[in-house]
Structure formats: C-alpha cells, structure tokens
Length: 352
Image 1 (cartoon, rainbow, N blue to C red):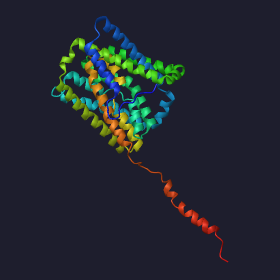
Image 2: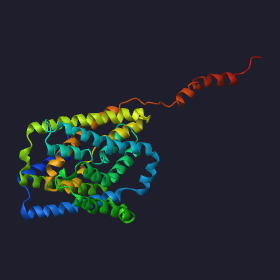
Image 3: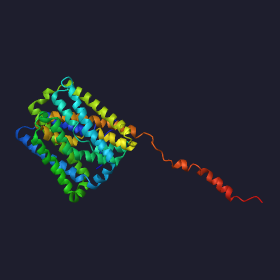
C-alpha cells in the first residue's frame, strides 16, 4: 500500500493531530472506574513493550562503533542533561507571573527527558549532516535517559513532582529499564524479526503513545485539573518554550563551532542536542507523575510540535548551503586542458 504524503505546505506532523484527537477523546469520553483501571493496566503493558522494542532495535555493535566519536556524543549529552535542565531551573523565576507551579513542573520535566532519534536522524540527513553520528547520539541519549531522567527528576522535582516518590524509581526500573535490557539480551533471536517488521512495529510504538496519552488525560479530566489552565497561561507557556528552543538551537550551533566541530558534526549536534523525545517522555511522565501526568506532559507535547516545525525549516535551509570544502582535485587537474597540445607537439613530425 502506497503511503500517503502530508502536504509540504502544512508543517504540522499528522501524528500530532492524532495526539490532539486522543486528547479530545479523553475530554469527551474519559475512562472512569473499571475502564480507567483497564486503561491503566494496558498503558503499563504498552510502555513495557515499547521499551522492549527499543532494546531489541539498538545494535550493540553500532553503539560501540559510535563511541569512537566520543566528543560529539559528550557534547549532545551535556546539552540534553545539563544545559537543558539548567534552563529549566532558571524558568522557576517565571512562577507565578507567567507560569503556574504545575506548568513549571511540566516545563522542568521536559528539559530532563532524552533527545529524539527518528526526527534527529531525518533532519540531519536533509541538512546533509553526519547521519551516523545522529543515530548514535540519539540512541545514547535514549539509553542514558532511562537512568538519568528519573534521577534528575528525583533531585530537581522531588516530592513536588505530583506523585513522585522512591517507589517511582522502582517502577521506572521495572517498566522501562528491565524491558529494555531484556530486548538487548534477546536481540540475537528477535532482532531480525524486529528489523523485518519495522514499519508494522512502528505503528505499535505510536499506538502505545496514544494509549498513554489517553490514560493520562482521562485521569486529568476526571480530577478536573484542566480548570486550572487558562488560555493566557497556555500562551505564556508557548512563548517560554519558543525562547527555550531558540536558545538551544543557537547554543548547539555556535557552541559546536567554538569547539571546532565540522559542519556535518555541527548539524548532528544541533538537531540531536536541541530536541526532546515525546516517545520517551510520555511513558516516563505517566510513571513519575501518576494522576498528575496530564499537565506534566502538556509542555512536552507543545514543545515537540514546535521543535518539529522549526527544525524542518532549518534543515531545509541547511540543505541549500554551499559545500564548505570543495574537492581540490579539479585544481590539481586544471592543467589537463593543455595536455593535448603538449602531446600534439611531441608527436608532430620534426622539421627537416
């Protein structure tokens, strides 16, 4: 079946429309009582299966090969888990003038989640950057985030995380880390199947995320927490996230230049170091925040769409950049046009 292409003039990711539709469904028909328990159990199973697939997909050999470019990966990890959280902590000064405390917690949480994999690779490829580096950087970020994100949340959010506790760390290990390790261990047997059915399992990935969103926002609707978010607060949140994204895009680009990375590496660093993963962040939020996950993931969902739209424009412009180091071979071969004349002189009959 031929895949339908989204119009280029419409920068909205069609998957975001599905997410918004899921939010609308949760607003109209939230899961209650027994249905809520069933949805919660299904969401937990979907999260575990999702991270099992992540572990089964990640090639250990590719990951080890990517370690050779350690400077790039350290830079991306520093942007993802040091610079981003620092900016998130700085946004605490915006409470309560622009952000409410729950929105600030969601904003801080989004700065703690790992980087993306798929979109970072796609945009790096479009911009003619270092695609293998983007693959490894995104994979390393997701792997490190399984451990680092809960630890950062424990240290920075603490008891104010809305249901976050030491028990949440145990749930993270059981629901995320254990399935991921199991996928890695079983990869020699299931890796081929996962690779052959990559497209079908991709739908499973996205369906799992939709189920997590429905469960989280259903709980929010039942508790009536949406009455605490006004349109003015949402507008302020969008403005804050726009500034956050702009700062990270500029910092990753010019910071990588100051560190003397090549153009191709700078592109990979910019796209991998300025993004946050919705696929990893939503399952983690559902575990860490529990019933309060709906407000916690709202900033992440908005930031995800914003980064896709902005980075799509940047990648397209980078694709038209001139080659920074043209091949010097034509200059060495420049005298070639004279060669025929020298040959002609050499082979011409000598005057008698």
